[in-house]
Amino acid sequence: MAVSGIQRIDHIAIAVHDIDAALRFYRDTLGIASSVIQDVPSEGVRIAFLPLGGPAGSKIELIQPLDPTNSIGRFLDKHGEGQHHICLQVTDIDAALAELQGAGALVLDQIPRVSAEGRAVFIHPKGTNGVLIELVEVSNKR
Ligand code: CO
Image (tube, rainbow, N blue to C red):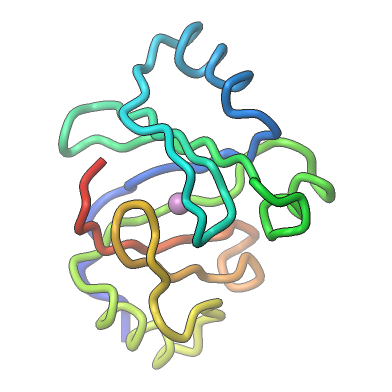
């Protein structure tokens, strides 16, 4: 059974050491205004969203670890800066999670986690041809 209710690419996330330094390219050189720059203490990260294409568009998300030992910090240690995940918006995260589990997908969350935008689950790159994938039910559009 396939996952129902996948709507659009919500964001593409890039892990960075320093958001202020990264904004000099993504905001100042590319000219994409940031809509949000905030700490997400529950995830141990600082994020910036740079939206493109209006309400139906998507965003670039810059992620900086606040703690070098968390998963983003370890990602940077291992891979350096670069693409971290792709996020797809779904209409119902609980239904999507149940469908993923039913299909035997390598979900990393057994209950949705609270993200900056709503509730989300991640799927391990081993099950997705090498890309960490986030599904989010947006309740707080940024
Ligand atoms: Co994300």
